Each structure stands twice: as structure tokens, then as C-alpha cells.
Image (tube, rainbow, N blue to C red; front, top):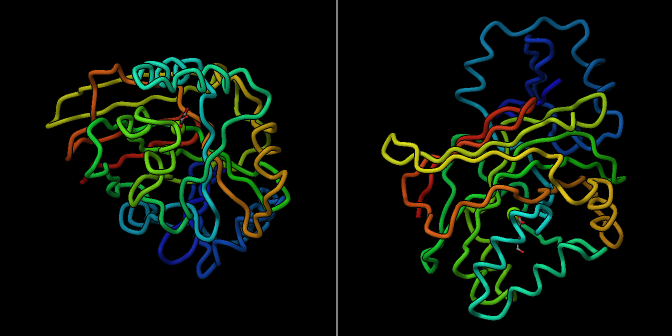
Length: 279
Ligand code: DO4
Ligand code: MG
């Protein structure tokens, strides 16, 4: 079952049919430990909509409102290698090797939900950055009690030049207007994602593919429950939260994003998130 946030409420996809729940408040709707049961109950007895494409094309919003969006770092070996490479000249690389094996994960604040870019929207690169990449990340949707209630796709846009300069610049490399994209919808399943789930990233420039990469979620070093447990240990989230789980796809050091690039992230079973790059 998938849930999309749209202008006029919520669109539910179940077994190829779509149901409209008008005037539902997103924050109240999504923050529910028994979300799947609630949705099943709410769509029973209502007719499916005839033209779901209209809503998906014209009304789709980022699936977050008052939720905070956090992110995990260096959860895949490729991420550790990439950060070591970008920071080695400045002497910061050792921190990444250490956090990769540490018990405490790297977690950082990324964006408020209402500031996140939705499907089809424009993500940004900073004007004071010279080296920029998207980070395609499986994103957990978590209730206020700390239960993982769904999954979506996140793009943790990152400035590698600022991050590589000094690890203490991380908040500036990671959090700025247009730095977080999420969507298209939330997969609300009966249980955990299959271990064979793949994340793929394709970047196109002037209609040509300039980067493609893929990673399996089985390559992640951390358990999702452990990431959530660290995040919730000393923080309360009255509306729930979203947590990006880190990237395992890191383009080579000669790659940087350009204005106009199209970023396409796909995760099996969840969908495809497409955004274009602006300055
Ligand atoms: O430590 C820097 C950020 C790491 C990150 O965002 C990732 O691994 O996805
Ligand atoms: Mg990341």
C-alpha cells in the first residue's frame, strides 16, 4: 500500500487502485503506529478514483509536513571511502573511518518536512560550493513512538567541497534551501523491506546520461532500528520524523552536478523520485 500527499488531502494506492481521502490532515494521518490498519479501514467502502494520473501529475507534494527530516552518515562502505578521499588533504579523513565502525552512528538534522522539495521540484546547489552530488537514500518514516511505519525515497543533496574542507562544516554542506528532496509517496507495508531491495541513481544532462549507479540495501552497515533508537534516545518528535539512512552510491571525484541536471532515484517497491538541479 502506498500513500501520497496531495494538495487536496491524501491519495492511497492499493493493488493498482487509487482512493482519495479528502481534507485529511497529513500530520495527524501519518503519525499512527497502526497506519496500515487505519488506511485499510478508511478506504473500505469508498470507490476508487477514475483519474489517479491527474492527481499524481498535478497535485503531488513532498510526503512531510511538521515532521523533522534527519539523516544518517557513513552507513555504507562506499560513503566512508568517498569522504576519506574528499577530506584527506585537509586531514579530516580519519573521522569517517572511525564513525564507520563506532557503535554510535552519525546522525544529523537535514530539514523540516515542510521545507523539503517534492517530486518534480527543484533541488539546489549552493552558490559557494564547487563540488556537489545527490545522495540517494532509503528514508524511514517513523511515528512519534519510534516505530518505523513506512519507507520513502530521499535525496540528501551535499556539497563535497564544503564538507571536504572541514568535517565541522557538515551542517553547511548538508542543510540549506533546496537540499532535501523526498517522495514520491510512502510505502506502508506489512513488514520490513526485502533484503534484495535496490537503490538506483541516474543523472542526465542535456538528455544524456552522465552518471548511473546502483546499491543494495543489504550493503548498509547499520540496522534501521539502531539508527532510530539513537535518534529517539534524547529527542521527542510529536509529529513523527523521517530518517534518511545514508548513501551507498558515490560518484567518482571528477563528477559534480550542473544546473539543469535531472536526478532520478529509484527504490524497488517504493517508486521513483525525479528532481532537477537549480542554483
Ligand atoms: O559524514 C558526512 C555525511 C555522510 C552522508 O550523508 C552519507 O553517508 O550519506
Ligand atoms: Mg547522505
